[in-house]
Image (cartoon, rainbow, N blue to C red; front, side, top):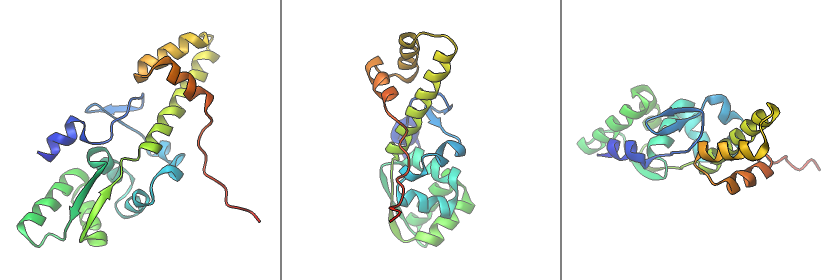
Length: 171
């Protein structure tokens, strides 16, 4: 049931161009390195423990939920660990259980980082299209259709600057 829920859109879904899989957009590791400062601390900890791709898969399939992470001593907890193994592999699931079990693990949706990635993609696509001679209004209409947004929202995105990490106070 959980897998069907996740495949039906119970995880992180976003519109965009990168790599689409089962109706959800998958981003490359390099894309996230630019918005790492927008990822919650808990997700950065998960990346350290189980790796980037495994964490991204958890966020995609289970983002916004709390998962009771147990050590696998009882039949119920063994099935929970087995489900994690299906998602992220047995090695990563073992590292996660060893590092964090027992706990109720909240898996964030990472919307801020995903929206920033989408917005950066829109701005770069706009720049490419207009540099190639396409009129701005035409490029905006194309982007609105491609990303399932209104043209007004695309114009708002184009007016925004990239969200950069805040610098530490130097003095």
